[in-house]
Image 1 (cartoon, one colour):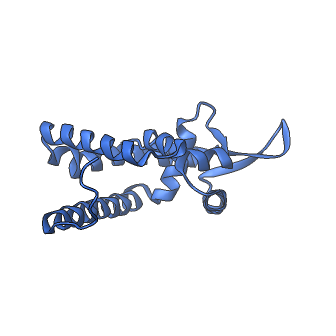
Image 2 (cartoon, rainbow, N blue to C red):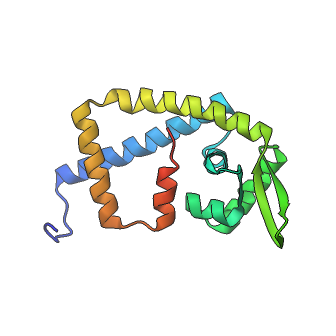
Image 3 (cartoon, helix red, strand yellow):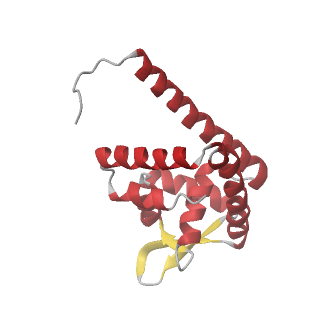
Length: 165
């Protein structure tokens, strides 16, 4: 497992700082571009893509939370905001009087399709095209090693598979 010391070297601190800044700035850049080009936030996008990828284009709020790794209250608040903008709608579950489906609306479908095209272009421009094949292979290996060490809950693994680019 390596050295168990808690001390970090200056090189390790620089590696972590650079990795953290790169990851944060990439997220911010993708967020700004999503807002500018598709008119939705990353939070909107995460819910829309979960609905879009479901076969029926509808999920219960709890299922959405499990897929994207959010607490139920956060999902509920975000869905309320999205419903006001007509990106999603709520429908009663026929088989459960207490249950509610969150359904992808036509506007939500258009938004996610537009966002998908731009997301692919943006990740290509800011990530894939910057790296050569060896760097991509190394980053994939590194990412898998870190995830294997963290052992994320199932919802995080599902959410990662939903991270379409």
